Length: 158
Image 1 (cartoon, rainbow, N blue to C red):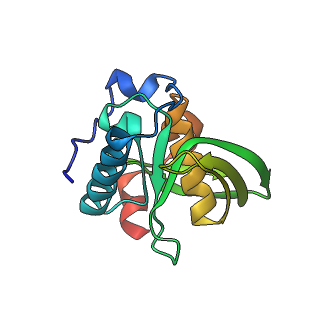
Image 2 (image 1 turned 90 degrees about the vertical axis):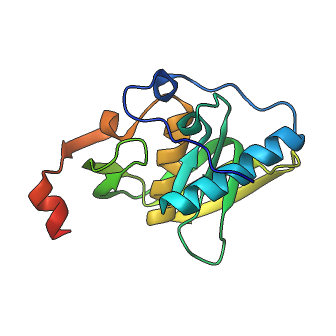
């Protein structure tokens, strides 16, 4: 396992639509393990493969609950309901935050590292993280969805 460099705002990888994963092998397992290490070191709640320069439909989410690190390969949002509006940031956009509206509840269909399909539901922060990371796989970043950017004073108060 190793840390990967997180690409930053302006990197073209953040604007590309990622290709589906077709091979569920050791290379994929290593990517997932490296991404988990990188996410933990960065103290984030989610990380998508394009954020480490890999244009594949892979992301992970860890909101610090009993689920731990959730690995999502070729994820699709199949259902949403409700809405929430709140502050959102991104490891690829350090020290930038915006108000973003997201669904309150999300159902995601994905595959695990072995290619097995599963369904995961998320509410609140987990729903927000699922949407944010899956957006990355489609070349969409949170600033694209921002209602407005937060200024430094607002960030400090939060």
